[in-house]
Amino acid sequence: MTLAITNTLSGKKEPFKPLGNPVTMYVCGMTPKDRPHVGHAFMFVHMDVIRRYLEYRGYAVRYVQNFTDIDDKIIDRARVAGRDPLDWAREYTNAYFEVMDRLRIRRADEYPRVTDSIPGIIDHVQELIDGGHAYPTSTGVYFDAATFEDYGALSGRTEEDGAAGARIAVDEEKRDPRDWALWKRDDESSVTWESPWGRGRPGWHIECSTMIRHTLGERIDIHGGGADLIFPHHENELAQSEAATGRPPFVSYWTHTGLVLTDGEKMAHSVGNFTTTADVLADVPPDVLRLYLLGVHYRSPLQFSLAAIEQSRTGYQRLLAVSRAQGGADVSRETSGADLDSETAIARQAFEAAMDDDFNAPRAIGSLFEFGRAINRLAPTSTADDVERAQGVLTSLLGVLGIELHEPDAASDDATPFIDLLVHLRQQLREARQWELADEIRDDLGALDVVLEDTPDGTVWRRG
Image (cartoon, rainbow, N blue to C red; front, side):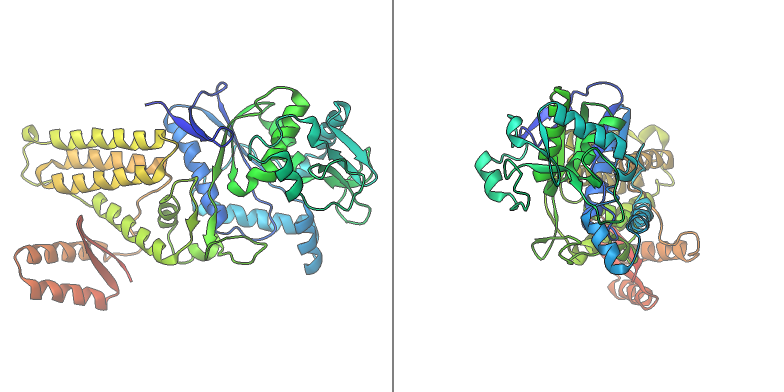
């Protein structure tokens, strides 16, 4: 099956045909004004999986992710706190790395920052002025949306929609309500730069256009970000980039993640309805959180729920139980392995078919749970080597999703083998219909803060 990606520009699944080698991928990173919340984790985990799967499929990938380390919100928050805006941005950039490293989101090949990109941004703005696509005013420089014929193609917004939805501008020199700032004059803020149009700083959208061009080139394969960036940010990026280079398409595949919601509303720093990723990770293992975040397709919204995370914890325990499965002690090598090898081939094929279909991680995860059930079912009639081989494939495919199987506190918990033994003994008692003794084991383990859950795939346990 050919890998297909839903392109926001066309609204259709399109066969993946990269421009060359390596595949170029740019993801809009954080504006580090506060600690990363679950909405950020959702987007970056899914983009990480897209990168991992491309590499699994044999592509080399050059992955770039920016930091918008200066903007009005950073300046405002730093001013209220009596802090330097650049120090403020550095603090929350570090906060990003702390939690995303724990989530095993692989580091980008390059992290361009706005504050390091000012000369290139100024050159880009001048290029747009020279090409007739931008004009200076007394307050800065604006892109002239009317000069880009395909403006609105990415978001589907018409000229009337754009004008009606535009913010009322205080600058009466703007030619069109849709026009946006490429450079903003500012003689008062502490963080500004000299330019041909006066001291100031860049507008938001021109920053990514410039950073992409300087790190990946004039055309790239994949551009990722949250759905809330489609308009105006990515719409304006597209217009600026293609207007400057005259080389469409700027991006071959636009990929946008759904929004994480709190009580039906977008989780956001500006609203204050956010749960930080660090707070979740204080109680939830990173692999469980990844499993939860990958439980919905990347383009779908996610209603944040702590109860649903607990369901993912149980699912993770099921996978962990598969890793403990052992082959039958008296199984003949001559009669073992064929069924398990067949299930392994089926599982790999199902996993790849799901991921080839627009990176459908939920379906891929479902195929791995099916594979886990097959391993548990066939382990007693398979040799230890056969079981370990199948478990290795399960571990490898989970690794494509960035999920690793870890025994809880395995390094310091000497009780794990004994708990496993008691759980196994209880299962034997249940099969022998010795319900009273089985319940006694369950209650005794419960008194030790070990919670048992009986599932169709067997009994799993976790610390309470």
